[in-house]
Structures are given as structure tokens and as C-alpha cells.
Image (cartoon, rainbow, N blue to C red; front, side):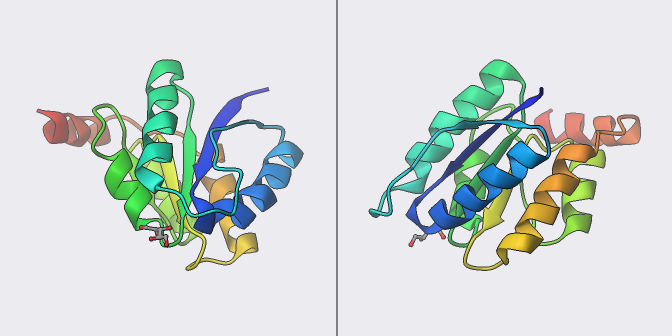
Length: 142
Ligand code: RB5
């Protein structure tokens, strides 16, 4: 069973709980990096913990905050992380196929939970196409 890392701040907690059930149904083992409390917390700390795990394992990750913006800004500071904030299935599919994104960011106050479940499924079931897209990623890092 493949593994996916998942983390959220207080604003993303309900959505994360919902997605944990969906991930189990999709046969993904979810590794939870917190928060598991509704108390206000700081998203950069969760982003760092999850990014460390994604870099260490090579497994994909999902980060959730209110808008998804803070998590995506924080995650993209880490070398080797390509975090994509997605609000539709097309973005999630292309984030994998063209951008080789290894983290999906979601905005719990922006996108509905069923839509987020579809976005997650699209992210996890698509693969990087390589070729000219690898050259472009190399240009970002170079
Ligand atoms: C928390 O109120 C909110 O600022 C956070 O979840 C996130 O949306 C930040 O980008």
C-alpha cells in the first residue's frame, strides 16, 4: 500500500479528517503530521515537518490550511519541494504530469470537501511525464 503524508493547521483540521477516510478508501496509507487540535497553530511548523518527511521518503504530501496559500509559500522554500495549490482536478492532474509536484496544497475555506477529495484522487493517480517538462524543472533549479 503506498503512503502519503498529510498535515494541516487548525483551519484545515475538519477537511483533513474527511480526507483521511477518503484516502483509506483509495488504499493509501496516510501518515499524519498534525495538527490534531482545533486550537490555533502556526502552519509553517507543520509545513516544515511534512516537507522533511517528503524529502526523506520521496513519498507525496498533502498540506491544508485556510486558503492553501500559507502552506504553499512555506513548503516551496524547501529545496526539492514542488508544492502546488490546487482548486480543481485539472490543476491537480497537470501539477503531477507537467510540474512533478510532490506536495498538494488545499484551501479548506476555499474548496468544498467533496471537491477536495476529487482533487486528491486526481493528484495521486497521475504521474510525471518527464521529457520537456523535466528540462523546464531543471531550469527552475538551475
Ligand atoms: C489561519 O487563520 C489562516 O491564516 C491559515 O490557515 C492560512 O489560510 C494561511 O495562509
